[in-house]
Picture (cartoon, rainbow, N blue to C red):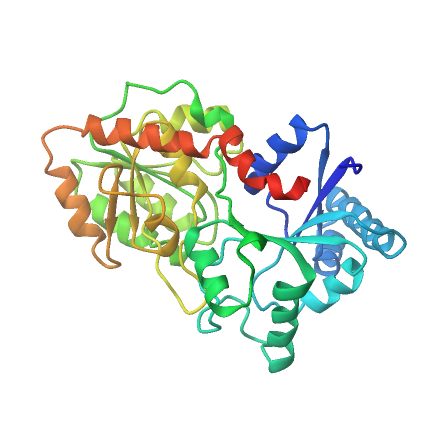
Length: 350
């Protein structure tokens, strides 16, 4: 490979989704650079909020798009939501370059997807041409993603592969043994579709268990209210320090998700699931397409939406923490180490 740079082109940026790719490229002395295509909205936001760093970032993104018009054969990994009508805009700039599509979306029959506002036969045809003709290779985060794409589009087997997300090396170190009994932790966005109110209500009525919440979002005040009035519920805000986050994970027995499927979204392949498993936490999650590909009976608990109280009550009734499940979770998490996932990105070097 003569090129010394691979680009990630994403709407908002998602660096933690490319840990495995970064590992592979570093091994081959190739740079990985991140660019974004939501330039206009971010520029307006930077001006209104007087955010110079965000504004400068958009200048870099703009320069990248201009450069695309006067160069060719760049390798670009594109992350864009299925059936987003912005695809035609992006492809105009990428028409002289090698495009690799990266997706974690698990439904491709047009019945369930996040971008529904401007769907039209034209948009669907653009996506068909993109997937079947214009893309060099498709990297699907889950087996269901790959299967769905193959069932709905004419894709040669060699054109698509499964490449899971990778855990950051920080989360594969210093496995703790000082866990608080019956302790649960939630990490993520504090929004309605994450089912937080149901969790807060449960733990407010079950002091035998404790719940730690880490994150930020629209329901932050709700979380603070419960944390202020219940000793077994704590809120730590957003934690960007991975070492500190890893340390906090090590104090708990279970990681907990209670996501609610809506008309545009369900829980996909969650990084926090595999990162917590690497620390020996037993994951608990609803039977959405992402968790179902990670969690097994040997490593954690899956439940039907609406049944979170039943599964939590069952776990609180256990006499002891299941050390076997915990060890199995750690063992499975090794499949998601950067060096293991890096091998699944190899088609990008061809």
